[in-house]
Image 1: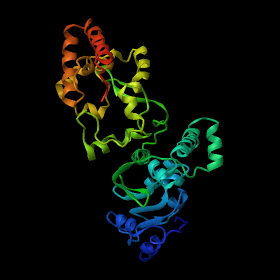
Image 2: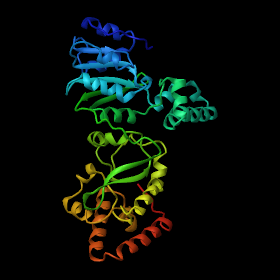
Image 3: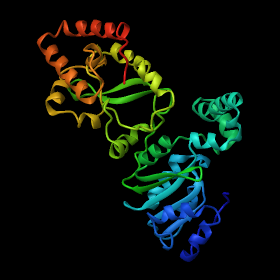
Image 4: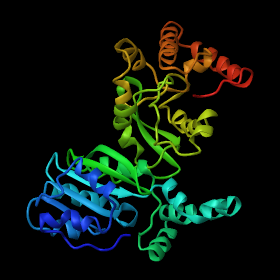
Length: 357
């Protein structure tokens, strides 16, 4: 379906050229956002930043009909697109997600064999690139093509490279994304990429601490927080609703607080306590009532949240009310409150089978 295209200079031939590599539905989708007939719209099928930067003349829209999975240096490619566009200009592209790739494979119809196949594929295409030494083997064999990517990681990378997500849609077995240049790239040299990562969170007195956690979200998920809230808002649990950033195994890991265990490192470092309000991001902190904000900043955050000790529901309102009650009691009885809440939480977890949302 995909074959190399040369830069399309004549605006009248753009749609004709596209129709040979993509379907009418894709063309119609692109036309909802950019003028494919305009001489200022650049359409390519490329994985090389040079083909973008070497293009003479100004452009106000770039459409790439080559999947992101075949781009070796994804962020450098997105950064090159960013530099070619002005703020407000559009970048449209496509990616094949985990699930779309699995659905495409015929072996997916064989229940036992597919489990072995996809596990081995995941190890080679997803784990090898993250391990020194094995990474060289991976790139030697694949040349960086046919990478395993999630929708969340791709969109997160785009945001980290200065783009605003306008829309995304599954068409013909691929996820097409529409973005708009918003700012210069972040040039993040240490993105969250691996089984363990450190989250920037507000500690006591507003100090930023790096909270250790076992990954339950796809890489670059932190860049999509505002976008998820914008399209879905908060769920009753106080967490973003319909959060596609979560990995398939996230639910079970979060239910039993397994992802929180690395935070014991923060406790040993003196940045957190065993019991206390959960450490939150600056963005989430903005949505907390002002009186609770002030109370939160007086104490170190904790691993075991008050709503567990008080056996409350995990809704946003009940969680915040439990935090308020805990913090008020902590101010009155600074020495015994944490001990009492700790043993109450253990009782609720073991005897009452209290679980995370």
